[in-house]
Image 1 (cartoon, rainbow, N blue to C red):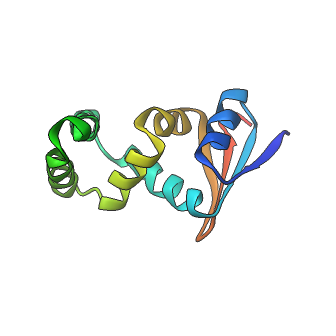
Image 2 (image 1 turned 90 degrees about the vertical axis):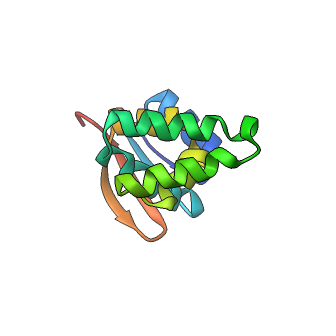
Length: 117
């Protein structure tokens, strides 16, 4: 089993791309990953609307941030999820959800294991 420890978004992206069987996420990044995987509790329509509002932030001068937060609140999502989506990106979070299971979650560490291992 190939295991890698990551502390930055760039290292996490590389680890997922290389298909490591286990990824240990530490530090501030662990909190963002922990919050990001909460995305699996939302339906696809809500995810699309939130992602669209976040993508529009640069074009709306931040006004769509209010829309994203409102939509998230109505759907039961937390603001921490919005922050995680902004930081990690919806694509990376979706890859994590598709390819990995959380096997250990603590305050400053998340261990992800490739599905099927």
